[in-house]
Length: 436
Image 1: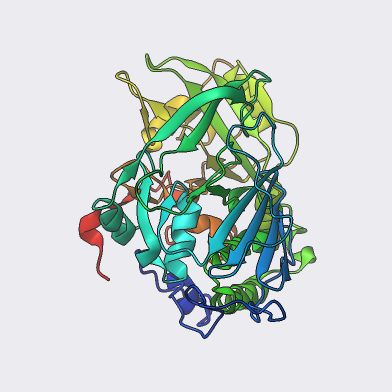
Image 2 (image 1 turned 180 degrees about the vertical axis):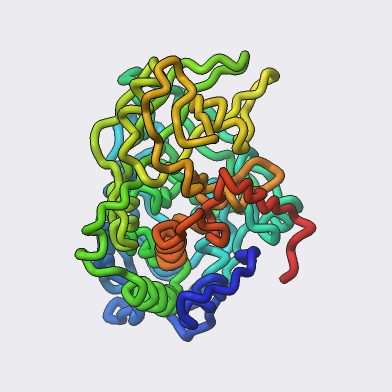
């Protein structure tokens, strides 16, 4: 489960949120059924998407119909032991169709493959770790217990074939080879992945692309639907929703205009800084910051080749969230430390002034120690919890933002946000940290 135990002082109700403990609630069928009754509602427990999650779900008899708008895919799930519903025709594996695939599966899941860090976090929250039977060979997670479990399970390869097709998140309009997960001969049901793909046995889990903070948590409901665990998901979500709304600040709270911006320096392996980039906050992130009384930069993405010009552009920011990486000479990258940021952004930390030739830009986020990164919890195998549990725990994330907002000299006790000027160390995790 989640592994960094932090005692929150904001309110007693946050104690349970930090751990997001699994729950056991009576739900739908937990296994295949032995007979089929066409008049029966096989899913008395249902979920619905109320916020900007990016998916929709409807129920009919022995089937669930899910539309994943983010991945541009359609999923038909039906109760194991009953026939597939009429018209549930999956897109053929060799189809040339670009997007809008239909994928069909019998549920509940019992032997699944992970290729998605958020799906891993959700499966832990639902106490369904025993259904994980393998993982994509390059998947990395921060949960110590999931790291330990995956280390003893098959690591699944991706296979490439023709004909080619377009794949989500590929910016160019060119074609790429068809990608699927090699599940044949291993008794595995499907893969939870992170993007829509031409694989009839993969299902995309996308909380990172939800448009609403609570919509991110609704992906708990999405994954639960593959296991008939709607009742458990509804309880988990209701608790998250309640805690979030209890923490949420009124719209008037950000009248003071404490400005938050996201940026990165662009560095290559030989140490050269090629430029600097201002990154607009995604809609869910801007909402979360606003609900904490903060005002996020949501303008255009802007790139600079002059440090002076970059400093002037960000001079109105009170808090900087950094997303830079430190490239390694032998390939790959590591996460920066404070001195890397000082050098990368060309900062003069003695007085919040730029150290570029003009020295004329005052940077408001330095003196109050208001520079952060979301990699406080990271694993020794190169994963960060910002890609995992952060994606589906908006109540705890909001509490982090409130701490950033209220700290007068830099927050040091956030769950995911590491204070860089105060040189808060990374909480590195490994399988040896698993305690349950």
